[in-house]
Picture 1 (cartoon, rainbow, N blue to C red):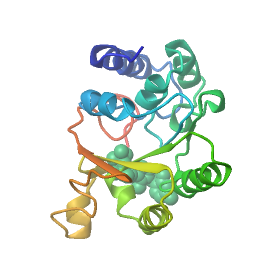
Picture 2: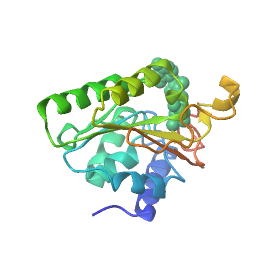
Picture 3: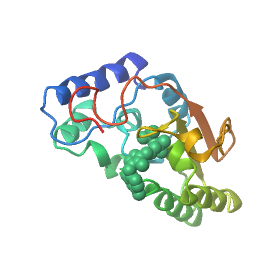
Length: 201
Ligand SMILES: Cc1ncc(C[n+]2csc(CCOP(=O)(O)OP(=O)(O)O)c2C)c(N)n1
């Protein structure tokens, strides 16, 4: 059953408190303010589908069906930044743009094999402005690959304003909602990494 916004928020709050207490000795990247949007995205994700993420992936893991305890245990083990649960078809990388070609390749394999599955590839709005994102999206669209890119716009790239950085008031995929790109905007109450008290960058 799909998790509720309150359950997602409670999970991140628990990670935040544990991190601020010094009990997680590796970076964490938390979500907030996008619970409704994420639940909407996951209404269109089937169990056999693949989900590709970045350094910020707790909500995707939970909504794909990885048990809360398993996600939490991996975070405690210091692996929040690149959570992978192959048996649930969830794969993450902390390299900006790193998962995009892998996600495209997975969609190519699905198309060639005729398997009934899709790929959902998440990225921040700064990642969406990089060359590799534009190439991945162009290739996927032109070859009609079974992949959807979800662009999550929190306005920031670490501490940099993404629109200021590119001197572009409207971003490349802003407002896009079609078969291949799903853009949404959100305001987070957390910093880029950490939970606002300990080890901030
Ligand atoms: C190749 C590479 N360059 C730089 C970084 C450092 N870095 C981590 S996250 C990030 C900003 C990404 O911003 P955005 O794509 O908007 O995602 P958000 O964290 O805001 O969700 C940067 C530059 C990295 N992880 N990989």
